[in-house]
Each structure stands twice: as structure tokens, then as C-alpha cells.
Length: 291
Image (cartoon, rainbow, N blue to C red):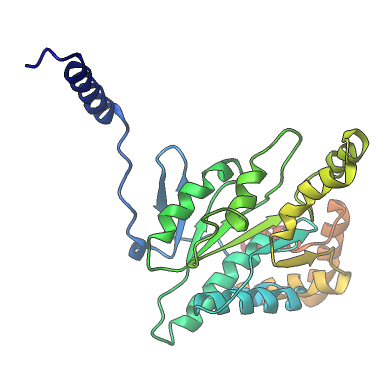
């Protein structure tokens, strides 16, 4: 062995590198996307877990949001066919079917794609708390030949949370940006994804209030489509209820359904698709029990 100090140092460094490589956690191989049409990002394992049974409703049961439905399905289908499409922010009233529409749109688009030679669109869910992993997830998806709809439900950011900057870079503006085979959909109760008092505080304390607020608002600007969901009318609510009654084949008099559905909404203090479904769950259970 050489006594040259440089050679000795290089040898030690090589040993340290080899030791670190053995100690470093091995990244799991890329998932087999043929296993399922939907996957969930698992942060601790840095991989995607296939979802064999997606929790969703048929798109025909989503009542009172016809225009939003058509916009989302059209945008999603264009992307699935390799045509230009926009990232989408679905924002607004809670319980009005924002996340349900995303999942139902993927199923509807894949139904249409099944009539062609095109591969199905894959749905990837990433949880709000894992947004920092988006660059890693994008790298993984970008290496595949499939097309992916990355979906984050109930996305919002609070005081001191800087992870929104990772999302901004992924959507637009970063060196790599979003891969051509990936589209990003998010749902939120907030149009700008940030609490109003956080934005007002920026105005009050910043040296240049306009620039501070613009930096926060620019996140939602990176979504090409903003789809608003608003509280539904009584007629829309009853349409939702009647649609579920027909789909489940419940043999209940229309007068009873109407009266009980309105009473249910009154006790809940709201009318929405979620409230309609919760009422139907209760009604179906009582009908099955003979009540």
C-alpha cells in the first residue's frame, strides 16, 4: 500500500463512500402502473401504493353541478388524449362534490378511452401534508409512458407554512416544471388557498404590501382553471336526493322523501351533495330495517 498521504486519504474516502452507500435506504423500484388505475403516494416509503377499489360515485349522480362537470370532463379528456389542458383548482362550498367530481371524471374519461386504443388515465392522490414530496413524485411519474392526474384534496396553507412554494415551482416557474404527462387537480374551500387574515396581515406588516400579497396570490394563478362551487338551491338538493333514491332503487313515496329530506337539511343547517348522501344513507338503512 502506498504511503503517499494523498493515496491514503483517497482510500479512506472510498471506504467512507462505500459505507454510506450500504447504510443509505434503498429506494423501492418504480411501481407497475398496470396494476391499477389509481395510486396513493406513501411518504415514508417514497413509493406509490395501488388502490384496487376507488371510493367514488357515478358521474350521473352528481346533480346541480352540470356546467362544472362538463368543464372538468372536457379538460381531463383532452389531457388524456395528449392535447393541451390546464391544471385545475376546484374551490368553494364544502360538500358540493369537488373531490367526487375529480374521481368521477377520471372514471368517465377512462370509459371513453376504453373505446379507443389509448391507455387509461392514472389517478395519483397526494395528501396535503406530503406536498413537499411533489418534486420527487413528479420525477417518478415523468419517467413513465402513462398519463397521470395528480390530485390533492382539501389543499390549503396556514401561517408560517412555506410548502406552497414547492407547489408553485412544480406547477409553473421551476427549471424542470411539470412533466408533460402530468396534470394537477386540487380542491379547496379557499379560492387563493390561503386564509384571508394571513393575506390582510401581509398588507399591514410588509414594507411593500402589494408585493407581499401578490407573492401569496400567485399560487392560485398557476391553476389555469378555477372552478367555483356554491351552495345549492332547494331544487338542486332535492334533485340530488331523488337521483340517489332512483340509483339505489328505494321504494319510498315521493312525498315522504321530499318531507324527510327537507327536514334533514334543516337539522343540518345546510343543503349540499354531502348532506343529500348522508340523508340517503339514513333513509336506506331505515327502509331496509322496515321503518
